[in-house]
Length: 268
Image 1 (cartoon, helix red, strand yellow):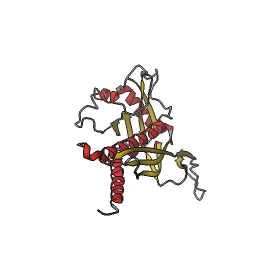
Image 2: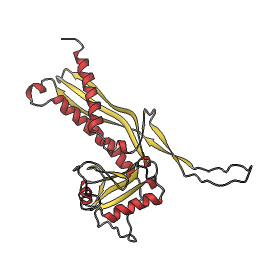
Image 3: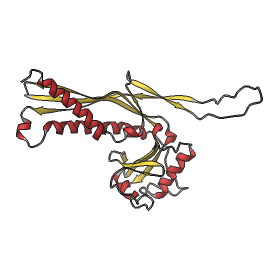
Image 4: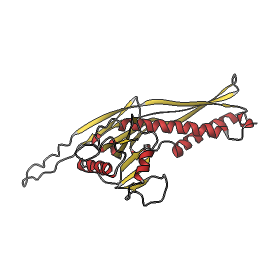
């Protein structure tokens, strides 16, 4: 047997964890503004305001747009997901123990990525609710509440460019299926497009008391940063006759533009 067989195991495991994270991990990372390869403990996302066009006299000076530039700092956090693989486990069970731990680590880090993005969304207080339009905290996800959020994004000049996303809880997904305009499609629990946005269910949205916080937002309203993508360290511990597998990442998320993220509070 080759003396480097352990290195082959380590490299294969690390590749499997990365692949599993890409395939089965975060649902929300692709729906927000993303920055990779960050150096340092934080990074900055630029926010550019709207410019104003104006006319000028012949041979006059071209007027400036006076665009407002602000920035949002996103702090990165280190996260770990470790477990043991006993040397003889695969001899005693009818499952691939390495695959089990691979997927468990990928799912754990994927959920953590989504938790960071959801926490950033929770920073928005831009809410599609109010007695003047008929939505209350005693309602679930109604057609009126969805249209109110849609209206608020439009009023704020949030681009309707195919980059809008709506993420709701599973209870709210069931309520969407009772809305006639949403129903005619095949796909079960697959994400779908409606009102110019990608709609998807998610089990990890914040629930406060009886209220589930759902969001209708634009991709550029939230930023996600990664100093380190998912990486894996595998070490042999002779005293335990087992491998210790540690999957880890360094990532963060921040709300860039609250006007581009509308919260829909839904009773559950």
